[in-house]
Every structure is written in C-alpha cells, then in structure tokens.
Picture 1 (cartoon, rainbow, N blue to C red):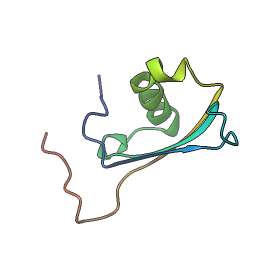
Picture 2: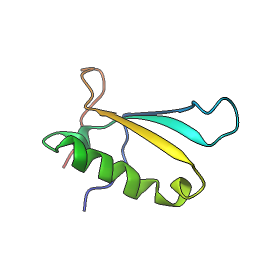
Picture 3: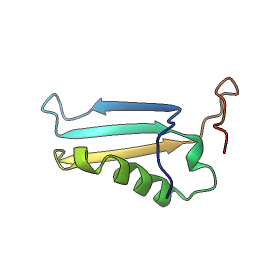
Picture 4: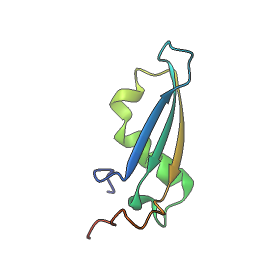
Length: 75
C-alpha cells in the first residue's frame, strides 16, 4: 500500500468561515505519479481518515511536484 509519509507539500485551508467544518486540502507528493485522480484522493482520505471524522466537508486537491529542487524519494 502506498503511504503519504514523505509529503513534498501539504496545505490546509479552513473555508467554513471560521467554524472549522469545511476544509480545502492541497497535497503535493511524488507518490501520486502514475495514479489516477481518484486513487490520489483515496490515498489522501485514507491517510486523514481519523481527522476527517471531525469535518463536515473536505475538498482535496492533489499535484505532483514540478520543482526540481525537491528530491524524489529513493525507492
């Protein structure tokens, strides 16, 4: 199973107007390479499943790093 243990970047924004119920999650990771968007989002939801229970809504945005200064993890 793939894990998000070596995230290149993660950013979480509260978009609920301050009540902490709706979030945008932006995740950038080399592990997404070759995966469909659905598989990428499932990977994020599985990683955050304990935290998601407390949320009313969640929008997930995933990307693969393009910055060459970030090293791809060794296999």
